[in-house]
Length: 427
Image 1 (cartoon, helix red, strand yellow):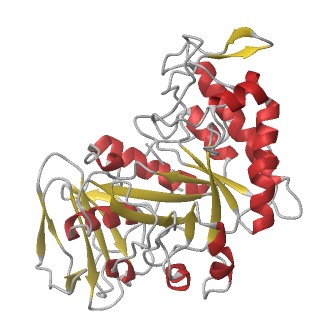
Image 2 (cartoon, rainbow, N blue to C red):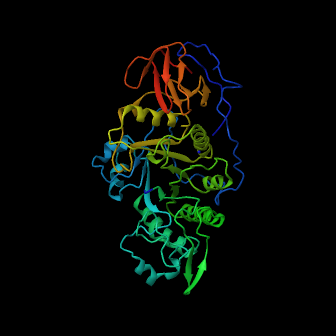
């Protein structure tokens, strides 16, 4: 890996007091909601039952693994995870024999690149010269991230069939549940331009990052590849691309189409912009809308949160990640936090065991921060440009580390916190 259900709810405020007090925000106190028209286009197998059954994440904090090549105790890792992005095939039997046999397992491929590093450019030019995707100089392959693995023309049905037969069929036979397709993007970030067909140049794209034809083609690939994976027998597979919303709107028609075609979203950008910093308030709230939307469509959302630090992560970074995650976590969402590209290990932390329970309602903006009340606690995040002080309702609270919380807590810019109520359930 180189480098989305919204509903009107009422929050009950208080900590075991049984008294509801409205938040001091305008209107109903809810954060701004972007309407999403999910009828833009249905997936190819709309109406069919779900291909993948995800574990219910409605209560508590749920984690997943991003690769597992450093994991030696699979049985323990399985107790910490609902999903594994790109797990080692040799670990499948141990996962299935664990106390959590229904965690979702996925086999990794880059979505356009041949993952087999032994297949050089010369190999592809000899085997399938018309499959190689080049930049507009008609010489340089459309390499991604400096990776020498060759990018292939996914508009060619033969390429999609090759992906299904080479990766999908063996993955299903091995016991995987999904194909994890890495580096999926709607923009032409690596200047793909065309192919040679029967020795003659055929231009497919302008080479510019913003290219409607490229966007249409990668969406068509997601629809076609997913449909073929769903049709595998006797074991169908789901598709989970690594896709980050970035600056796109959650109701962008192309984003809505993508969600309709796939079974889950893995977001490597998360709430930390790939480890580069904090998203501004608009991007943070757009992402929350998107995460809710994806789950409302019966799909799962997996959020990676990278931090540009040497592990272990500071508690402040963990709390930002967890509090942001809890704002939109419903029935199918899990979190992974690590240093930048620190993948492959079981990064479970004690904070993930916090018994916060189920949400009492939707995220609210009040007192200058975003808040979501849970059965046994609060998630609080400040993605704004102004520090705030949040006054807690009646009751007793501690932070995730057992420290008592005062009646009001300071919430600086770009911070989050999770507080647990110790004086009884609130909803």
